[in-house]
Image (cartoon, rainbow, N blue to C red; front, side, top):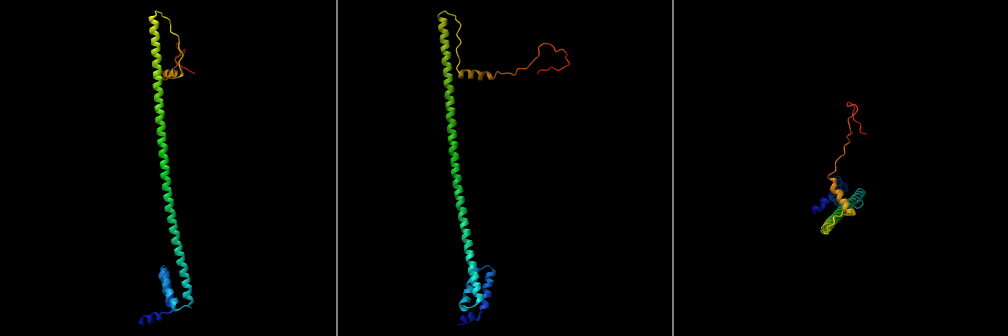
Length: 188
């Protein structure tokens, strides 16, 4: 009975002030409890009614903000997951491209090696044929000059490539003595 007497001793203003104190300290749930308790005792009090409406509105806003934050966090985590999956996909695509390039390079190298070995074999065969013809000509007792054979484009290229290392720069040297030794030599 004493507890009911002490709660009755509080006026509507006391409930309003208690709820307002909780509201100021940003404790909306406790403020709402205090105001609702006051409204049960003083249902017609205008101040308590307005404060209750304000608190409920604030509580809804807080819930919406929390929901929005949660949605943003979910979106961020989803975007990060999608980015990581995209990165993984792009990395796997890059890896596949690199593997394909390596395979292509290996095939080209094999093809080049095969072409070189074929060219060497062809050149050896031609040399052997030329030697056989020379030996046959020598056996027949004929010392006829050999006919010039046409070169294949591959043979010509190889010949030119082997001669590249022997190239030297041609320097112009005028013939004879210059008329006046003090004048420089003009080579244009």
